[in-house]
Length: 235
Image (cartoon, rainbow, N blue to C red; front, top):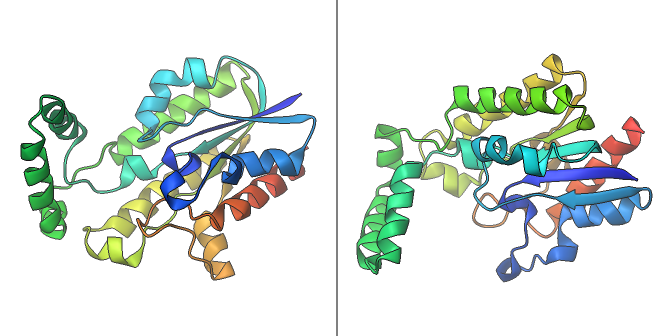
């Protein structure tokens, strides 16, 4: 049995409100395309970032040998935020304390001034140096215990033009973090990078939902096909 382990964020999870069910997800479609002896599993979490993956990699990545580890991470790390992770957690606590009116008021006010606030206070859940360090930590741990023969990195998709127009240097931030993913292929022979931006632009396809981040139902089969082609080359 050749295990393919997908570790990602909400881009690889269901979104029923947008018509994306379990059997629509790219990693489920990948299982159908590959068939035996491949077995595709996923350890994805909403709002997952590389810092979280470092904390959970002993359970999610290093616990069993696999043919390939697919990392679909980066947008949670890199996208410019109105609130730091600590501020976000504080707002969540206020909501749980039945002070949701305060949370909603603060969130609406900040969203109204998103461009100016993200220009003045540049906040990311994971800084670019920490993102780089986290990836090296993951790569080193995987290689150190021979957890995976191959590591496949899915590139970070650009956000929509509408979202970019309201968020200071959103596209620049995405591309800076995506460049780190690309460089991993130079430093680690077992690492392979899939350029999702380049592919979808060449195909003339808008791969994201209106939120500018999550994969559209039409994009999932394409990502499955790209992964299958990469895995077949590695056989």
